[in-house]
Length: 183
Image 1 (cartoon, rainbow, N blue to C red):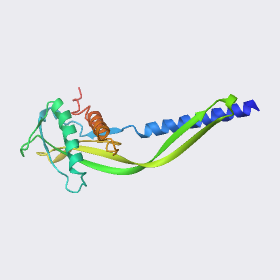
Image 2: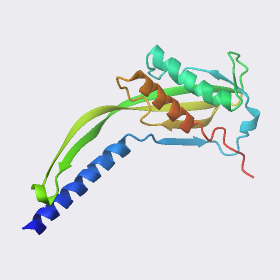
Image 3: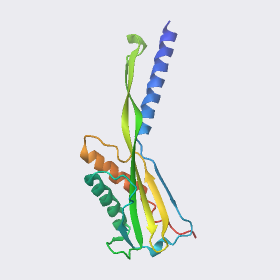
Image 4: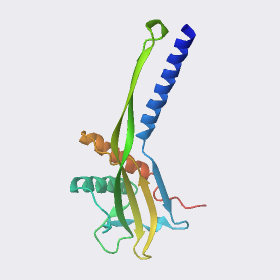
């Protein structure tokens, strides 16, 4: 009798652990990027923001926060923002918000001495925001670098948390920008 109860508790604990692990990984930001091989990124020193007309943009506050996050990263890398049409690079961004199912789990177990445990799991829908950043060479009229960070624009009630998540994602996204030349 104790063996069956203990096996049930172990199974419940493992199930709860997997649910909690899945919930934790669902919140991690994923970053990917791609660029044109052979591009000499060392020749790019200035950039100008441009707008992709067919893109739905967020409100003015989020637009400003995205631009400030990218500006901070590029400035730290030695790039200079300009309004000149002669900028070395044009920078644009796109956003997409989708819905994803999130599982929240809570469990308490008293062990076999206390007659087993109790566990509950609930699901909710969260908004998952993807930020894509593009760098274009205006002279060549070509996209040279594109990156995206998922789970970046997930609105919450805590404005500072939203801003921190955005800044962290942009830093992670632009960590390896510009790409180092191959030797």
